Structure formats: structure tokens, C-alpha cells
Image (tube, rainbow, N blue to C red; front, side, top):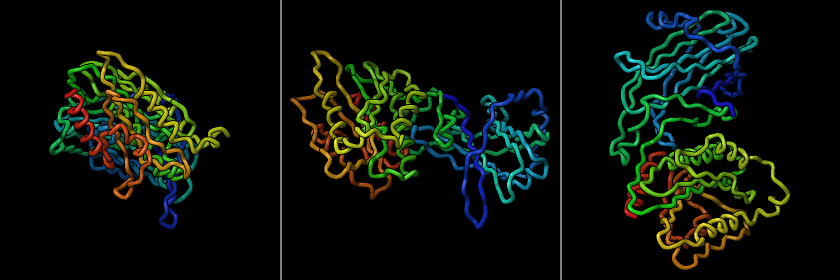
Length: 406
């Protein structure tokens, strides 16, 4: 899978006050050697705009994967690009420094190609993001058009405040100050992949066998709702990435992704250093595919039963004296199954010697209907209702504190 820096380009039509967008070609081409241009001289000369543009930074925000992100948007009008040439090879060079000028990362370079004159009234928008720790920074952005030789330089201050009452105050201890996400080429709007790891130690006294179980298939009641499905995807992937970085003092941690529609386990991985990003994204795409077999369609009323039977296998598998304590962390969105579905609660044989947590993402406070809750009720799970990234942060802190008592 091709991974790129987290930059998204949209072409927007501003007619009648409405904006519609479509992706624009992203080319590999010949890489830009920064030594081939006087970029240091440009930066030292201060801000410049040979191509009229608009640069705006967002306020810092917490992502579901518990990273702090600042996004920035660049707008270029078609008339301004057309004025200097029909074709353009645009390079955006981003770099972050401390307020006193110390570089904190390597330059991040993104390339976009415009092969012909753009229609009148069109505006190009370039969306970029960077993840940072709390602190004060300066964003330096250079736009260079290799076709025309034109360049822009911008400098913007960024202030990322500490969390008040942070339940996980040391979570960024081992992370770089600055990191640009990498994204799947086909998921331009996704959160992106980051190599830095969260610091989530678990000082458990007894060995634990922790399994993260997530439903990768979309909630059935939201079929066809693009925005809702994207929210489900981002929440699920973000939660898996964050939780997979739990560092147990003793025991194992694994990840399982379920496709409730096709009745399949589509992702399995023992996760010592986090999930394989490529395999996880491929599994998510498979679970999101609208193409269903006749067998899947005929068995749609058994989707809940598949989930129940999977949990039953995990819970009722035989252990032995001294075996690790079984811990299930179930990550789902609120789920409603087809009318007439088998929603018989899970049958627990004796004491499962387990601890179960249910992390349930909701769209909003009114999203209160969930039938997975009925299935897992006999396990007496500790349920966390999540709407915001901060809700997940609090849940992780409480789970860590709970596991340390085991």
C-alpha cells in the first residue's frame, strides 16, 4: 500500500455559494531536492506570496487515537494559477521549529500536479495536518511551483496547551515533539499513520491475556450514511491504535476485527508494537465493501448470533490453574440489527474468570439504542459510552487503573 504524507487536495466550485469537491491528481514524478532551490534564502527573506493564497490554521484538537493535531488549509484561486501558466507542479514544504528557531523535524514535502488550465470560478484547497505535543511552535510553509519558478513563504505561530486534569499526563513521554502523519493514498481524509508510540504502561500484578475485539463492519442502521460511516471508521481505527499501545507488565495483547455482515474474523494479530497498519486498513475496506454474497444476504438475521458465538468461544475456552486472566476490550458503535434477528444473550458456563470492557461509540447524546448490549449483558461488562476523544482518554485511564488491580 502506498503511504503519503497527510495532505489532501480538493477542487471546489464556488458557484451560487455551494462547494463541491473532487480529488485532483497526485503525481510521484521527480522528487524535489531542496538543495536545488534557495529555500534557506527564501525563509530568511521573510513571508512572500508570488502566487496569491490563503493559509489558515485550526485550533489544536485531540484525535481519537489520542494524538494532538493542528491542521492547516491552503486555498489557491484558479484565476491566479491560470494567470502564471496552464500547467503547475506544486510542492508544499512544511517544517516546524521552536519559537527561537530550532528545527524540530525534517522537512515534509508534498507534490501535486495540475496538468491543464483550471475552469473559471474554481478554487483549489490543500488540507494538511501535523501532530504535536503541548508547547509553542512555529509552522514554516513554502510553496514552490517547479513549472513557473514562483514561490511563497509563510510563518505561523502555534500554541498547543496542556490538558487540564489530564487523566494520562505522561502519555506523550516517549513521542517526538512533531510528527507528520502518513496516509493511505485511497484514504485521503483518514487520520493517517504515525510511528510515535503512546506511553501507556500497565503495572499489573498477574499475567493478563488482553484481546481487543472490534466490529469493523458498519452499523446496519447507518447503511448509506457516508458521514456517519466515516465517523465509525475513524473512531474504530483510532481506538484500536490507542488501546493496542497498552504496555503490560506481564501477559499478551492481541487484536481481532470482526465483519458481522459476512460472519468473518477479518483481522487477527498479536499486538506487541501496535497493529499492522496496512493489514488493518485492508480489513476495514473489506468490511466496508457494499458487495455481498448471496449467503451473506440470506444470513443477515444471524449477524448478532455470529457476534454472540464468537464471544462464547473466547469466554468458554478452557483455562488451567495459573493461566493468565482473560480480559476482553470490546470496541463498537451503537448497533441495531435487522428486525427479527436472533439477539439471545450470551450463555456463560460457570465463572469465566474474565474481565470485560465495552467501549461503545455514540453519534451524540440521543444515540441510545444498542442491541450489542443485550448480547454481552451476562458478562457484566464495564461499559463506557464515548462521544469525544476525551471520553476515550478517560476510559483508557480507568481501564489501566482497573487492570493494575488484577
